Length: 161
Image (tube, rainbow, N blue to C red):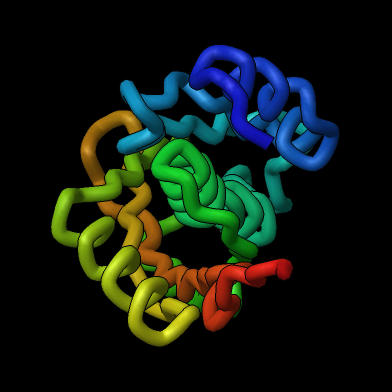
């Protein structure tokens, strides 16, 4: 489903898995070319040492590459299935303060995906994310492997006589 940047922002901010973890979509960039996300350190997502629970950090990074690719490609006329195929995370420092990260889709990333979707019918690639605290300290790095499949790859136009 195609939605506006504003609509998706508000829908995700009230989506229970994000809402209850205190994961906040600050804004989607124009034409879904990026997103800014904040994780608030709160009593509901804090572990025993006062830092943000690792599962919250992991969950915060899960949907965004897939959502961005999905919205961009749908606007370009593709019918695609998009999902996060795999992910890995490295916790570098405890997130004792609010964390934030930005995900961006570049022209090169999009061209690479479109070429693979057109030629092979699918695209699989891992992209990095870095999560920082309010003072600029790098707290975690994440690799998200995105899977895109062209739902109409290989179809031929049927001619009726």
